Length: 394
Image (tube, rainbow, N blue to C red; front, side):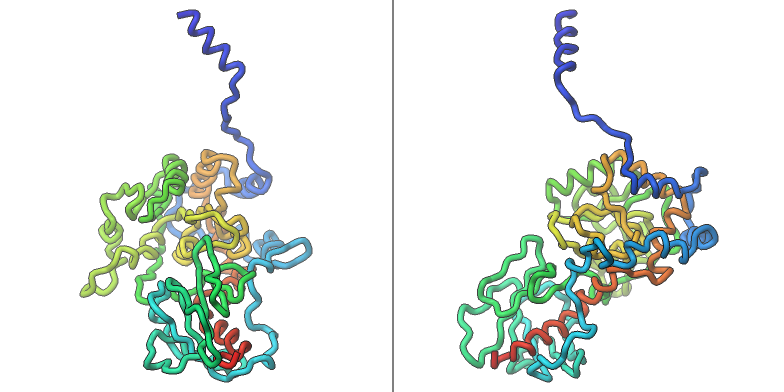
């Protein structure tokens, strides 16, 4: 027995096991120092806002986060993540006054995008899935199917869209749409397009016994493991198929009946996500893939709901969101440190309210550009690109 004990001690002396550090990065340390020393497990969001107003306020907020608010200043490369939309760009290179876009095949973009748009420079833009309305389209848009291999003179331009993480050109398109600024037309996941037809009720109160909301029904092993490593440390509700701990996919409606839409229509499980997550102080948002500029609806849903997102994803996420609006999980040394910070924040109404100050003080920062480059504005921006090429006469 003594021999085995000696062997264990011997190997422990030579093997280096990963240790959990308790040191906190300076940026996080400064933020923690602003929180009060007396815990206040608040549930009333309006009360938290009033306390923040009296102790901090918009003037101090703008000064404190001026570097994030004034993006593109010296030493900042934020503007490179987003295309410049509208503004003072020249209209003289437009070759057409009207452009029609026919969307071919299935696309996940909602049908309510179909419309006739009045765009910049007097340009009108028809975006439709109907070959009757666009009987002679200027361009064809493809997403899940590949454009035709040949385009003859007088044929519509070919547009290919890939908003997935591993975006790839088809090699056959004339215009390429993706989430990245370096491509022909950029489209972010921000905006109000997906609000239509859903219950976007925002709860005035926040749960204090259950801090974190998470919902995922695509159970990727790496994402599941990441979620599990954090959620094991925090009281949470996990909806969806992955790590579900609430008893089923539609339990949110049992918890929050006010989240139901029209009583005569059976809701889909995703219809009430926004309303349900608004009851929680934090929403865990993990991207499928960690890729530059790939910031999806997972983050923007949480922002819109009035929760504070705990985010794991794009390394340049700060380029797409309002100043001081999210908790970037990658900035913490360990999950234990992150969980400790979240628990402390949940008991500090002033520090928590500061994550909402951007919308209350009208401080968008780079988020303004993110919204301008969203799916909401994609029809006009694509039609401008088609007009510059001359459409069928390209």
